Image (cartoon, rainbow, N blue to C red):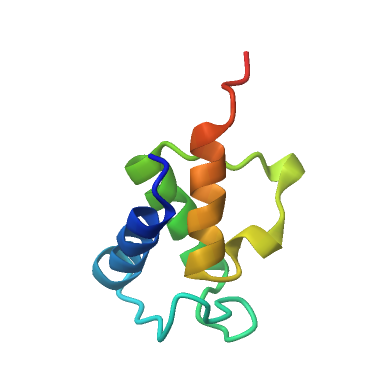
Length: 86
């Protein structure tokens, strides 16, 4: 999946429908705004893996990738286009 606009829409829908979180805009800071706490973050990771096949290596975890819906979408698209690790 490479269309960032479509991924952004799916992630916004994921927040609303699966996680019951209303995010005002795609660039709202989820971390500083307290919208995404530690439990919801784990739920987000599970949802991203189920929906997009995205896996986050905790050794290479970057909070900036999860700061907003827009950043999450960019991360998902980047992961989808990255070569698979052997």
